[in-house]
Length: 88
Image (cartoon, rainbow, N blue to C red; front, side):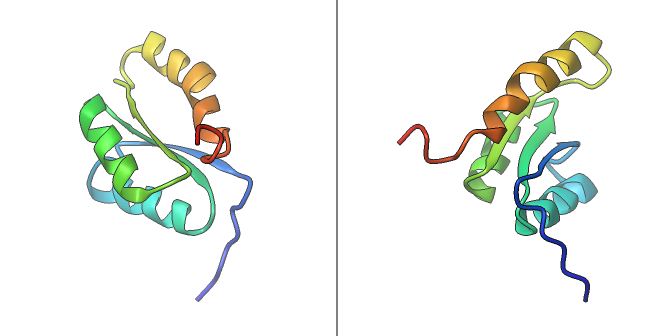
């Protein structure tokens, strides 16, 4: 099995509240990446991110709405990149 170290990297995974997107987000997080869990339902995205653990952020974002995508990519991805212990 190939092992990849993604420490220091950030992934923005759309559709990651369930199914294939969730599996991809889980694999990236397990490899050390900080992961933005992105789905249309903010509450569900936050729930999935909390379950995945530190280094994740749940974002509500409809990828068909360009303004939502820009806001998520420019502002909220920075929240994922912060050290998870900064708020403690």
